[in-house]
Image (cartoon, each protein chain N blue to C red):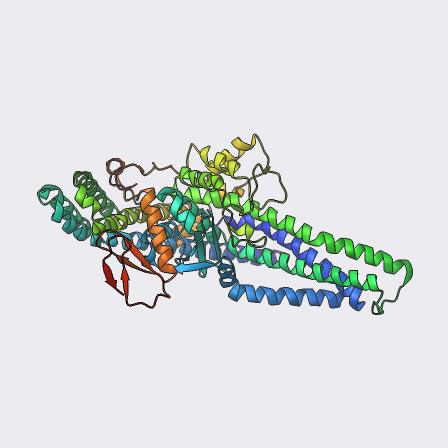
Length: 187
Length: 406
């Protein structure tokens, strides 16, 4: 009789553990997905800002065509990479950051442009969008770390294995690209 | 890493329970003294407390913002501030964008309020907006967002209501006891013990009534100080740039202007104590905030990284083996290393950082606008500010004499 009670108790405890672990795994996975959605929103915002920026710069610095075209094509590539997985997207975004920082370096030679109200507003938006991208990336990576720890560490990894939770992928932007961008903070 | 704050709450709960005990003791005594039944007093105390809580829950943030004479701004009023708040909202993983309020005051201060993260607001003074650069403002906003994220806002309003109830009860009780014993017109107490019993009860009661608000206040301040450290650490973690907050706090400390609209009850909510005096010691029980110099030193000692663990290490470095954790142990576990980022070069020709002069102009324009002044840009470069009461159809530029239609 006592043995039966013990067995029932053990089964209950195990079931409770599995239930709680499963729920927290779901919560963490949802958090990473939400965090990723945040990055997407900000990346889209950046893609939307760039044509505007290019137009404004063109009005003052038309013969910097090469730099402007590089930005435009990098932006189109980055837009094309949307939805092609974390890896491909991080690379395209890193390239775009590089092209943008070169444009910003060029802009320094045009004092009239730097005094333009429209340009200043755009620049604030761009800086802030860059910050938001890096902050949402930061939050996403923290969430992924949390989630991965849960899926890989004992004992929750058993539940994760049973119910098919897979480790998430970090969103890395090449360190080299970050170093290239001291003007508008891309880090 | 984002849910560990819970463990810190155990300590807070203990302190809140201690405050509640003080409230109940006060209520019990009042009941015993005036109605001959401690239970009646308990009921009165609890009813008052619940009513105040309900009011605070649904109206508290509005009342506080109104007391601070804060006014809400939208995105277009100050895009940079809005962007910074949004950046910090993203970094902290907050679900909803808090409302942003400006206090028209040249003192440097900021606070956060709201009953939960869904109904939250951050308020900063116009002086702060003017004096701080982007990185510094980010640090300050990060600190305020951390208060929202760590649920300090709720806790602090809960505590301030407890404190308020205790103060009110004790205040009225002492006054009534005082007058009754002075003029001897005391209603006969149904306990009717008379003699020594009465006198002892009176003395104990008066001592309790005098001490209760002080005890409650000390507990309140203790809770508030701990929370400030945690918010500083969170801010460093969000921004990955502790120097931003450190240099902001330095500017806040250097400013001598006192906030006009602050009072004792709202003081712990601000990023720096609005009534601070110079040279306050770290162990000063009656201060709502840790001393600024110490907070700055801790932030500046965070050489290794921006995680909670780094903040904790810096705290102990500054305190030379002080014991206890500032940051809950569970927050330190599994944090990993968090790198710092480089400063945004302020002097960079193309950083979107406006100069000090531009910031001043920006903020003063915002304040004019918020007070319903209209601005007209004259061709000669003068900016005319037209008061809302002006009824004339035309106005003359004082510089060049050109007339403008209104």
